[in-house]
Image 1: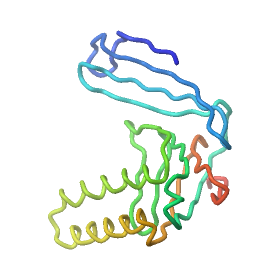
Image 2 (image 1 turned 90 degrees about the horizontal axis):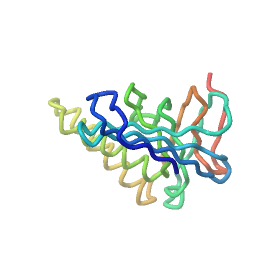
Image 3 (image 1 turned 30 degrees about the vertical axis):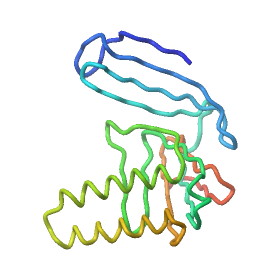
Image 4 (image 1 turned 90 degrees about the vertical axis):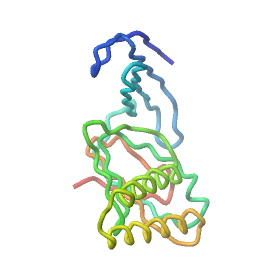
Length: 171
């Protein structure tokens, strides 16, 4: 692990930015580099993950069918879009982070996004829709319902690491 401290923050300009780079091997995916920057002054944070080898743009589709599937490893780059059909699409923005997690971690992030939109919604039908999505997510996490998870990545730096994953070239 390589760590650089007291770097100039691109946001606040203070010399309080810590940059960390680490390399790790992910089974069935290969070697990846994990990058992060954190400023102790303004709390700016940016993280990403990059494979050691160049990859083709990809679309990964995974059917969550039981509780065991929640443990499947996911590599998501900062350029990737996470989709759950008929529920949500999380597009990457300029501050989008890359990360390594599992299916359960992705579902928890989706849950937080839906909870936030539910709290901010003024329309009663939008609140009800969000409430129903949260119920469905909970049932999926308990292994009582199935759900399709899709990750589309124009950089090709994302993966759902399972034999059940259907990976194809992104159109």
